[in-house]
Length: 63
Image 1: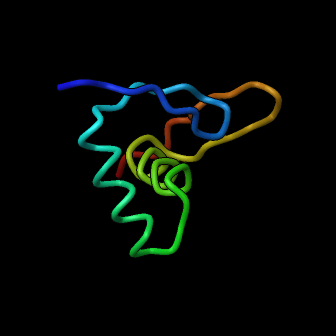
Image 2: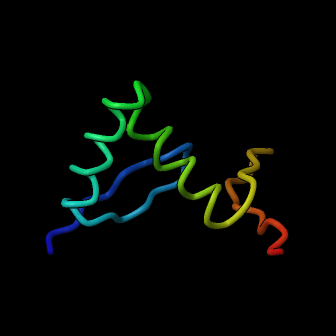
């Protein structure tokens, strides 16, 4: 499947184009931007996003 690069909150990610299409549909339904939807998904998967000058994902507690 072809992939595309997206920049979300300063972090570049590579995402299959089909996923971006689905995210766009969801973004329209939720009245949010594509970046917000991806950011929320990453936060749910990996924990809290912190931007203190260094882009990083801090692992949340798994419980």
